[in-house]
Length: 124
Image 1 (cartoon, rainbow, N blue to C red):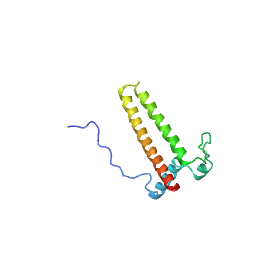
Image 2: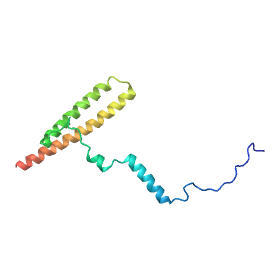
Image 3: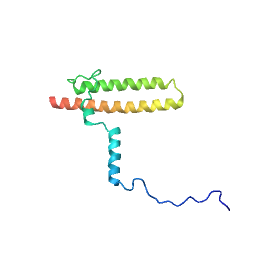
Image 4: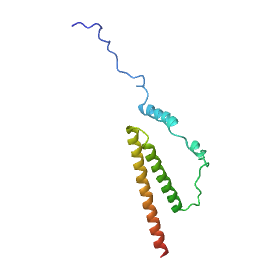
């Protein structure tokens, strides 16, 4: 069988970077990645979070937990209501989200129970 093209000429397997130290190349690549992917300390220093929506710093834990529990219960009901109006693939996703919300609600309720128990034990 005759090949339509000749074999490529044999060439040296030299890299244009062979003369440079591989550690220098690695360091340069790391600096480039850090420049684009890691924020600098000065960038983080001047970042101020928004205070538009803020929880009052003097709120007690029990009130915060009660509010979280009520919010989770509302989210559970909303996902259940929406699930009734969508087709099965999306319905399954919404019901899975509802189950996660319900599990979080159960956890918050357990913490509330523990807070009540520890507070009543402290007052005894």
